[in-house]
Image (cartoon, rainbow, N blue to C red; front, top):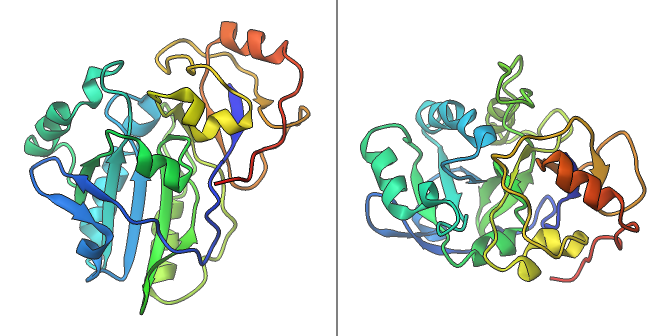
Amino acid sequence: MVLLESDSELSPGDDAPDFELPAAGGGTYSLADFGDYDALLVVFTCNHCPYTEAKVDELNHLAGAYDDLAVVGINPNDADEYPDDSMARMEDRVTAGEITYTAYLRDESQEVARRYGAVCTPDPFLFERDDEGFRLAFQSRIDDAMSPNKDPDRYEMREAVEAVLAGDPVPFEATPSQGCSIEWTDVERAPSAAAGYRERPPRCDRPVGPSAVYASGPSATRPPTGSVLVQYSATDRARRTARPPANPRNTAA
């Protein structure tokens, strides 16, 4: 595994970047379409990543359990590389009732993912509504199961949603989300490229090795707050760890 520090410049209290994206099932959505909700959970997601697939049921639960929460999935992946991430396949899953989010949107240009600084799938952003729009309240994992093969012991995003809806601060610290790299069509413009990765990330369906290294600094054993884990093959890991340390995260927009 390679640990990438999130390239997002969003901090608690920042405005949610706006978007206008087509939805599986028809129509186009922007932030204004969710203005009747008190909270908004934007999750960069896809159809093929095992880490994302393991969270679909929980995202469906969140969408159905809280009337004042909108759950918006945004799929930015390169559908030429991953046909399962095409709009047609998204529509199939919505029609079949496999995905019941408030909206499941397609970010074909990947501009929205870049604006949010999303890096992996799933990459969740929880916003709270105020008089001027939605502001970031919490960016963290969905639950404490960090492997697709494990069941969660704690549904952390549920707790965060309940706190936000009650007008309270989230009562625990954020923990990085873990998943496959977003499949970028232009890696030079990807948020992960700012951490020193200038080539297409390996496919997330390859076998992965057991270790992790930092993409943006010296080796360490614990992930920094606001970072995400992205799966790479053992071969790619060995090639990258043989390189000189990458430059620190680029903080430019």
